[in-house]
Length: 239
Image (cartoon, rainbow, N blue to C red):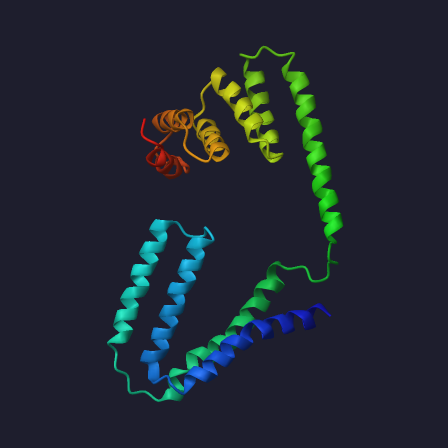
């Protein structure tokens, strides 16, 4: 039954493209028109990826410039090939898309597993939240008995901050990590704490900007979060 459903979904997704291809086929003339339509569709897709957050502004601009370069090249290409040949890539795409989707699903999917009801997913999420709350309470009890300046306490506060962040409590996570940073500053933890403060406030606060600057100053040159921290500092309001 699931294969029938997948086939119907694939057909429903491809029907608009197929109809559009057939309607526009009479007006298209050769490879030039097909290339122009394809490149314009790529520009629309890039805009959607930027709006969805899958592309940064810099990546979007670079990709748009490349597509526009190809668009200009296609616009000046006067092609005399037959119309049937120029539409071949579109027909090939209609056949390749469902085949590729099916291949990906067979690799990573599990069609034999039953669907999990929404109520079961909610119950599982609530159980995880309760477990995180219980662990956080236990950890606070252990930390209350330790020297707050000890390395054991520092590690405990790092763990507590991660637990609070998993529960969505940004303020508690930032407080726990700031306590750990007061014992010994770690650049990565400093950047993570600054990012939590930024997400919580909606802007790069002076406290977050100071943490980002110190983290950048003490982190290795190849720290993976360095570009993010540099962007945050640029976005920080002027003092």
